[in-house]
Length: 213
Image 1: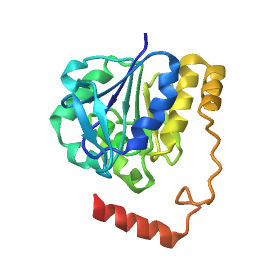
Image 2: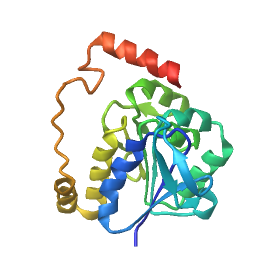
Image 3: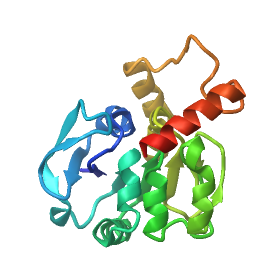
Image 4: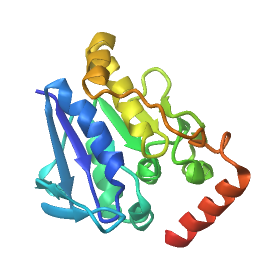
């Protein structure tokens, strides 16, 4: 049975973890949320908690590792417990993935050197500091032979999980999952990326996020 592990930490973004969970849980394997200690973990809004069923120490291997992002990633980039755990578990995976600023944690664990990768648009340039080449796509697979997959900000995690489901179980299965969750985005505004949004909006949001981090 496929073992999918999603580590969570104080200040993670809920949809980064739960969006891919909704897709990958339909592959028929086991999906586990883990944290430094088992128990509730609070998201970055401080209004929602998710219960981790196991501690990081309890997990030494898995088939798929999915690292979510959130404002809480900044405090973990120099946390050797987190970076060494990610690096160690990566040695066992078929796929190691991230959503949003979760890619910064992959970078801090030494996994992105020389690879293309993506992240939230506000942190793309930060990837250079980990030896990665930043790419603005919503889902970025590493070159052939690489086990790394990164997704852009928040909602892109659903796209990544569907693309990964196709690699694991085939396109028909991924299409069936997409239909099952009725993932057919039709947003009321065309402002979902910096290339389309008003520059003033981009600047204001970038400032607000910098203040919150």
